Image (cartoon, rainbow, N blue to C red; front, side, top):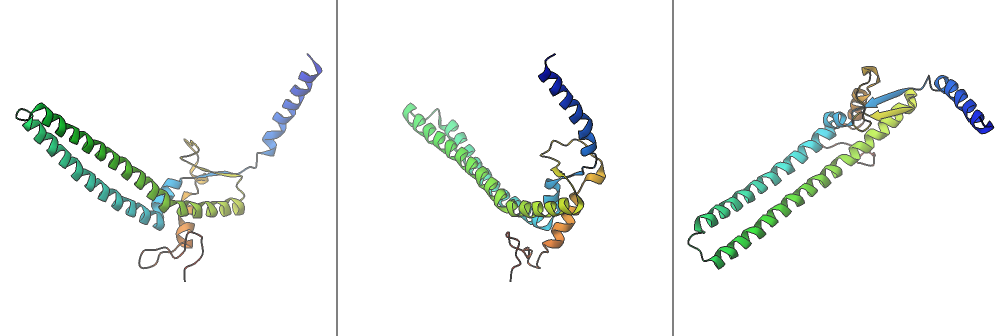
Length: 190
């Protein structure tokens, strides 16, 4: 063997023997951010607002789809009595209406996604700040998001979700009107 290969092998053996002892005291934890979002007061409010917007959009889409279906059935009934040109014209109108319905659906999907991001971004930023403080004060090397990290299983004592929810709610109390007393920048409102 060449001298380079022997040197590389020696370094690998030393690192392999030393690394476990260096990282033996490393602390890791995980959190379920989705569950935390669903169980914090701000998260519940955001989800309720999203559900209300979704329900409004769904009602509108259902109404539009019902009207489209009615027009389609009407055209099908008139097929035998319409001239081919009139049928083609009405069919083209229906195709345009279908495209408009599909565009409305896509627009509502984008709107809901943007609204969800708008409502949850500040919440996740506050959670990240809390998790950073927990990590620093409790000596964690890393805190993983259960859903993002692909975590399949870990002992419950490594789960910081409940602690995150409690700290979040205590640092972001709600007013009687249901609004958080802190703005997204983390400063108290007057």
